[in-house]
Image (cartoon, rainbow, N blue to C red; front, side, top):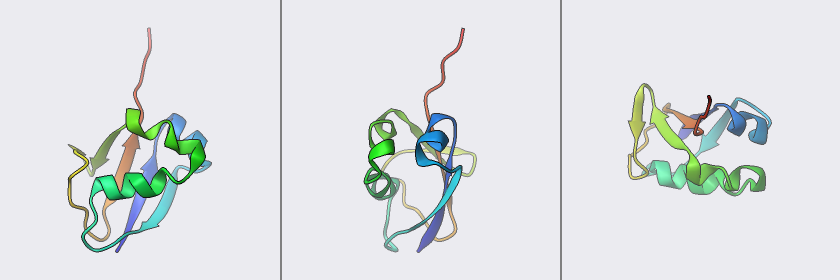
Length: 80
């Protein structure tokens, strides 16, 4: 199946894009997508600190993905 990865904040800079298509097995979870994304050395160190969302919902790593989903990679934010 194909999903879209939406990168935000520093993850977009590290990925070199704000959006990427990803092909996964039909039974893939968010954790499977993260493992595949972590093959990009530039992203690997940041991904464990991120939250993930499908649509408007924050999801856990065991969340089942379906074809056409948009998985957002949400890095931690800080400010002052």
